[in-house]
Length: 317
Image (cartoon, rainbow, N blue to C red):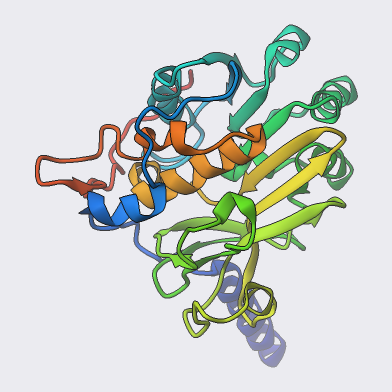
């Protein structure tokens, strides 16, 4: 009996260690970097204009985590005013799920929330929005829906979704696991082959057809000159850090990163998200590039934050 108990204990500890996946990684924003360094990747944007009017719908929900994590409302309040400041952009907000009229008005929906239990009718509305040419940027927790039969329908809308606790995984990551980018993809053309963050991601997600993984978290034993396809297949790589997806006429840019609030104050992360928005809209990213620096550039020309933001108090709405 004692032997059986010991085996059970060892197995349980092993499972806990396997499930930890870096959970003890301490939250820590990157150090601010010189504006000139970031501008290598933003390029020049003076007088850059969108080719058309763009209607964005920002979907958010109640904050459901500790302060500084899953701050759906705070991130909405950060980005919506910035996006509204871009000429020819209008932004509407939706709480938990859009109405059909909001879907009808939108060119792009940005979702950052834990989705509610959507009905078949709502999922059909969502799928129809994408298929007719509506575009989506899906951030972090927004890819999670249970049970798996519902997850498959969500994957039809956004490309990737959580396929259950036994099959999909989550975990923190730090600089020892860089975020490698597929720079051959138009959304990431001209960006560095890898960036360093301290954040969280999900992986081993359920994938629909037409999904292309364009960002993966992988051990730093990989190098920037290693082909992205090889990094994606390497031991310890976490797929679906970033992906693109097409369904009908719609485009989706998705990420499982973006757990910590301070991540959205990181210029390289902002740059990546804004590139994704532009790719979805089939627009030149230049008109969006001033937002990379907005509110996070100090008098010394350094861009970013040193604030961990972990003492922020969540709000329900």
